[in-house]
Amino acid sequence: MPDVFNELRQRLRSIPPSAVDLALALAVLVGQTVPFLYASRMSGPQPWTLAEYWPVLVSSLPLLVRRRFPMTVFVVVAAASLAYSLAGPDVPSQPVPYGWLAGLYTVAELCPGPRRALAVLISLPPAFAVSPDTFVRSALTAAAAYVMGRAVVQHRRYAALEAERATERERARIARDMHDILSHGISVMTVQAEAGPYAVRVAPERAEQAFRAIADAGRDAQGQLSRMLGLLGDPASRSPAAEPSLDGLPDLVARVSATGPAVRLAVTGTPAVLPPDTEAAAYRIVQEALTNMVKHARATAGEVLFDWKDDELMITVSDDGRGRAREGRLASGRGLNGMRERAAACGGTLTHGAGRTGFEVEARLPVGKRA
Image 1: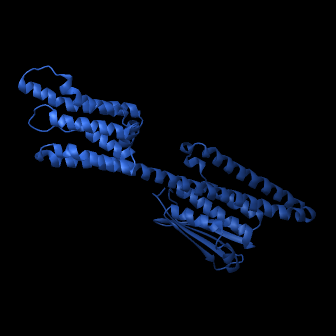
Image 2: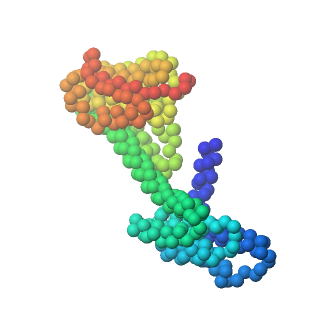
Image 3: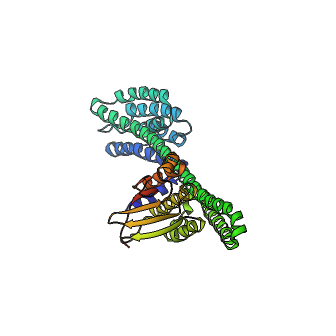
């Protein structure tokens, strides 16, 4: 059902403003012509004269240009509405001044504060000109028209603010992804490049392995960056397939293990189906934690533990490196802040600090239905 409403709303928004104004002017014209038809029926067929009918025309047709000249149209329509109320057809109940209400709505929507105040003052004479029994109705309908105009303005401001916030969130997401991809790839390549000259002299086979690791890290970073940059031009084309998934974790761990620290991937519990954003966050958190391990830990071994529980996934990345000395160095880094933001965006939490043997990162992410 919400999809039907959204589709209807999109179709209504696609209607040209000129068509909307034409429909509004015709509706007001018809609505204010009805009292003439009723009066003719009560008093017998009589030809209308322009002197009798002009207020109806002047209080409706100017609405065709209400967006271009909101204040001018309102003044003209309000004057015609007043004439319509004073010299209109003799009917038992006072007709509703639809044109005046449409003009007041337009001023409330499009004009600045001083002109809106002037429009309210101009509206007072037509309101008091009607009979006392319809004054309350006129006042309430005028207030409703004005409030609706201001509500549209507030809605647009809110929509613009939400769009700006969404843009900022997207920029932050792109910045985090770029940092994670580049930081991981460059760290792996740097470590292997530093070890390469020594390996060439004493262990040529290790040098060959180091060169392969550099090439693999470069190709992986290039592929991820290409996919990301390809999506920037068309946000609608972004799909879960373009995001990293947990299926890529074994290769990620293997690449890190080839650079130095022997990292073990362990899984406990029953895996669950994660939402695409949560799955991507889990991958990026592990990637950044392993990057920090390579860059800062001076570790010989590490572990990535996925512990699947009933309602959450607990990810623990630990090493046997420098522990507390490393914690102070990383406390204000972009990487740790990015990991915390990723976990929070999925409704989870992330903590880090000295573990039993070195440094430890622990993330808790909510899970979906069981696989």
